[in-house]
Length: 239
Ligand SMILES: [Zn+2]
Image (cartoon, rainbow, N blue to C red; front, side, top):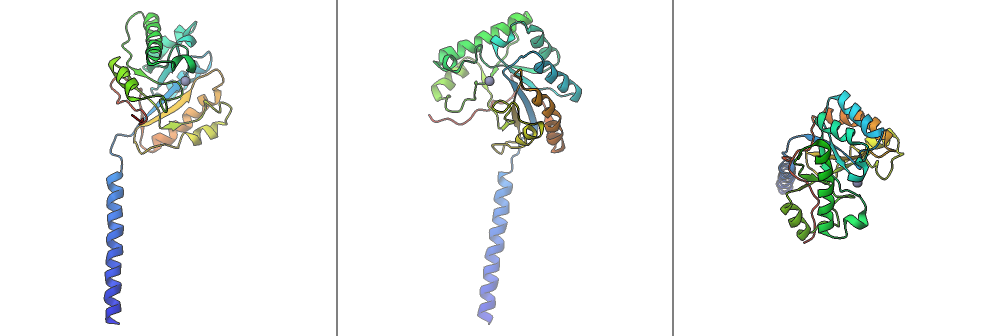
């Protein structure tokens, strides 16, 4: 009986220390970064939706980032001006958004970024010095070490995302579905980089902004625009 008791105590001690060790590990893995959420809206500007998104951001008094496409900017120069006037980030998302062309070579990719950058500077009448870009479709499966080195030599920071409201593939999803999708994060970073779109058909995205704003604000996040100083975020790639 005594032996049994000792064995039991030893067993309990091992179990308790195991649980304790686990708790320590969990604690060590807890992300330490600041709670910042970045709304990003790709593929605009578009007539109607882009303006409605800016009105909604205005109403909520938050800043976001627009990764704009050069060919979409024609006749919508006033929307580009408003993005800057409102204090939003304006990032480069190629001139044509044509995957076959954009990804035909790294030099074409960089030329496409330069084209949209030049167009923005022309609209604004001065060099806006934009240094952040987003790959059409994301960098996954496209970025490699050589391309990365060339992008850095050109002075750009890359921004993929870790939250996807899925309005690109499902523009007709309900507002509730978009908000639910926007609560999922693909990694443990405390910075949430939220992918959304401002195409002509993204009207539900406009309505999903408030739900996501409420969700992340209640979790202690603050919303910011991406700037040239924001640490870049890109998916790990095979060398
Ligand atoms: Zn895109």
